[in-house]
Structures are given as C-alpha cells and as structure tokens.
Image (cartoon, rainbow, N blue to C red; front, top):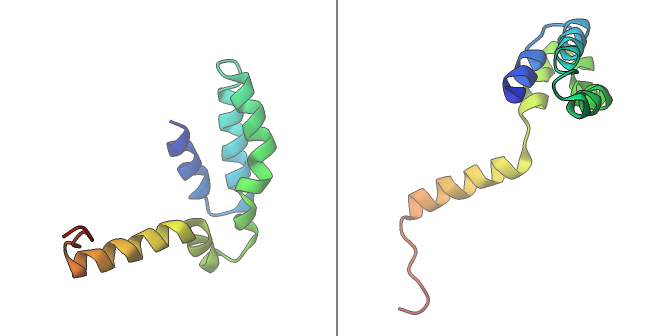
Length: 89
C-alpha cells in the first residue's frame, strides 16, 4: 500500500500536486498509524526533492539507483559468460 502511494505521489505533474497527494495520504493514515504519518510528514521534503527540477529530468532522477544498475551489469555479463567453474576443479 505504501509503495503504491509513493508511486502515485511521484507520478504527479507538479510539485503542488505531489505535495498535496503526499499530505492527503499522511492525513488518511494518521489514526491507523500515527508514527508512520509522522515519519512521512518529516520525509516529504526529502522524498519529493526531485520535483523541483525540470520535468524532462524527473524520470531519470527518480529512477537512478547506482547499485541496482551495477547489479544489472553484473547479471548481463554473467549471462554472456555462462557458468563459472570453481577453483577446486
């Protein structure tokens, strides 16, 4: 549920819409999970910081994850090389 919400807030076109979506969800969960709502209120500015950039850059900024990119490179290269022999053989 939280992941779907963050994705929805991130998909907004404007900063105001993203902030509004974020605050709306925080308010909705306040009586069920007040600690989570407090954490979300404190994290709003940091999580949505990329929204202040141009719209053309937002997608790449939102999806940049260097460790994941490295894992994909390793996976791609190991698939090409096939099975690796152990040193014991």
